[in-house]
Amino acid sequence: MKAFVVAGCILLGLAGFAAATNIQYQFSSSGDYPGAAFTFPQAVNDHKIAGYYETSMGSFGYLEDLRKPRNGRFLNIEPPGSVNAYASGINTKGVVVGGFCGPTACNPLAADHGFTYSDGAYATIDYPQTGATTAPYGINGMGDVVGGFCADCPRVSR
Image 1 (cartoon, rainbow, N blue to C red):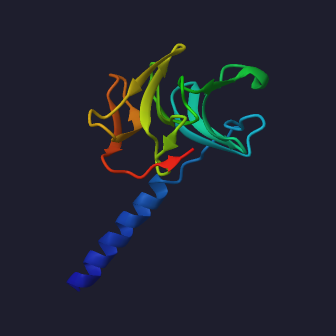
Image 2 (cartoon, rainbow, N blue to C red):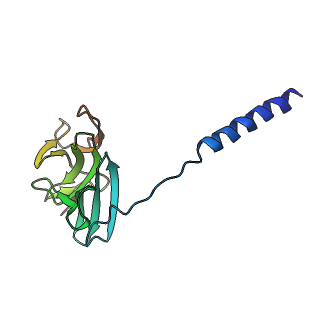
Image 3 (cartoon, rainbow, N blue to C red):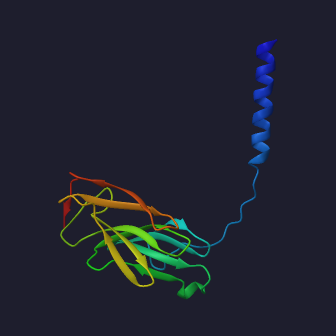
């Protein structure tokens, strides 16, 4: 009898969880970078999406302003000296974080350098060990960046 009561309580708990997760989502068209083979939205704040898109030339970061008309809502996010880039996070203040590869070599699993982008200005983020790669993925409202680094990651020559 005890096992039956416990199982009954578990089933009632799951039924309550199922009812609580019956949320209606609204979908909208966004993240379709013009001319891209694929677009990968990675992060969103109240009115902007950060991500990356791919073409035959490589991967490139973008920022999409959802308040603007469709034909003017995308901005390329490409740090100076980058060959490939991605944007992976954006905070409530609009600061974007991501990673990029330079012109000579690249870590094929992430990036060589990290960056932040805010109002047209870029800042590079590098782990303080010679030869290490840096791959930021998120940023909070205080500007704290989360990501990873690799001291001995392989690089592919360009």
